[in-house]
Length: 333
Ligand SMILES: NC(=O)c1ccc[n+]([C@@H]2O[C@H](COP(=O)([O-])OP(=O)(O)OC[C@H]3O[C@@H](n4cnc5c(N)ncnc54)[C@H](O)[C@@H]3O)[C@@H](O)[C@H]2O)c1
Image (cartoon, rainbow, N blue to C red):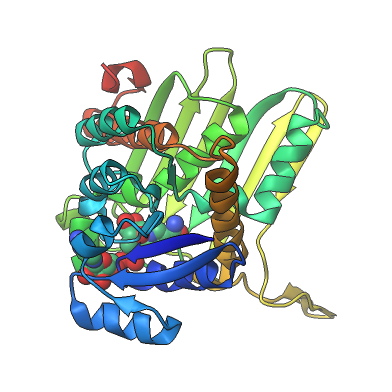
């Protein structure tokens, strides 16, 4: 039985607390938060102890920690937890700074402890089925990937200001999805962004609407589209064109009723946001982590994957600022 400490008791921590507690091979034993009342509330809900982050990391009876704290704490906590001998599942992104994330990777490698990054979309049943079909050669060679990822509404400006920007905070999931489906990193990244949804986002130095093109050494291309606002709900679709066909993963809808009348044909909206759309993926993600830690099997998402996606976010940010394609090798120098 994996004894688990949960660091952070905010929005996403609640989702992880459910996944940890419902898995037969893990037990949630403690939760911490910078704001003690947050930790106490979650601890009461899940029948575990509310403790400090340092306390949990120092406790030798705890085998693993799940890091669901604010992004700017991730690298420090990954290093502290692995140095204390724990296995780690850490939320994305690894850090706001690529340099810091690379240093973290170096420290973790020296400990040899397993660290998985929370790219939960790899565990979404639709996207993982699409990948299985792709890997089985059902559409021949992949040639053109298209990822659509629109949030229903922008977060508060206070969140935008500390998020690291759309590419590090939001599109990072899509960069990882592109790597997952294309089987590796692109050669170059061309990004375009604007703040058309909310000028305050632009004033905060960020974009809310972006299109990014990834080009690969062998001629393949991927296009990622992000927006912070889709009034009809959370729009999450993937399409991949291959030499022998097309694979598409469509949105999950609130229900499957299709109404056809003389006025037209309509269906329900996509499920509202990530908690509704991706809940099964967080549960599968946690189960995959437990299996890897218990059996010593390779982790399905590594810290290297997290650093790579962050490097792509860095390249996209630079591409927008400098109005030019940026080679991934430039940011990884
Ligand atoms: N994979 C996903 O789908 C997904 C979804 C949402 C958020 N996230 C990521 O999860 C992280 C948390 O996001 P959130 O939306 O839950 O934020 P949040 O602000 O709701 O929660 C973060 C919590 O961490 C606490 N905290 C900060 N420093 C801490 C420390 N050193 N020790 C203990 N607690 C600390 C804060 O007090 C806060 O309660 C972010 O990095 C975000 O990018 C991932």
